[in-house]
Image (cartoon, rainbow, N blue to C red; front, side, top):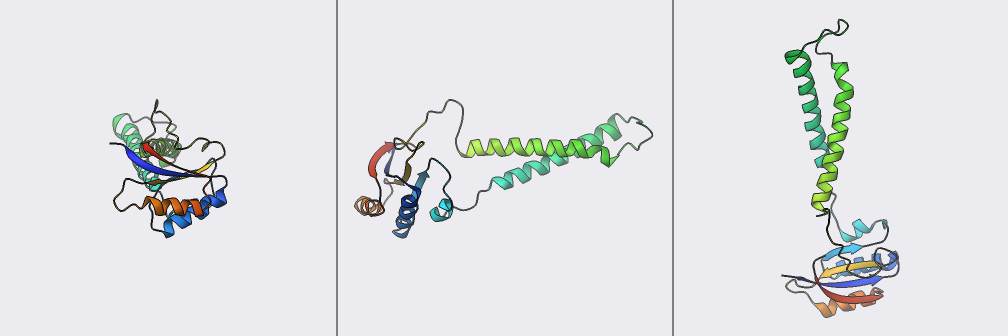
Amino acid sequence: MSNKFMVGTFLDSDSLIRAVHAVRAHNFRIYDVYTPYPVHDLDHAMGLRRTRLPWVTALAGTLALSFAITFQFYTMVLDWPLNVGGKPDNSTLAFVPICFELTVLISGLATFAALLLRARLYPGKKEQLCAPGITNDRFALVLRTDRAHFDAARALNVLETSGADDIQEMEGTL
């Protein structure tokens, strides 16, 4: 089952922001917005909520820190105690560098993996551009049209009055 989309392209970011506000004011749900560079305040205009990626980072960091402390304590105190310069076996200061490095490494890798999974990016995935030039100098606003109660004529009118350079309807997956 393929999805149907209405794609409006814009020449500048100001027109895109105006269109996003107009589309949301008319109660249309925005599927996605494509820009060639980051646009300030676009996420707020689209009504996006904050990402949950920091929670993944915090959870992975906590687990990595717990693992590092537990593993070092087990090896240095219980499994293979060594007398190194008369220091105690469970010297917490000796554990700090490895705990820090392992926490940063595992947190970074888990965040990267979560981002790739959430964005559905994987090796060999074909690019799917909704309009020509959106990665160079065009901005695109995508509305999903196969939803119930979608008024295509009204959406077309809103995009045209917002300054859309070109409006296309397409099928497929984005």
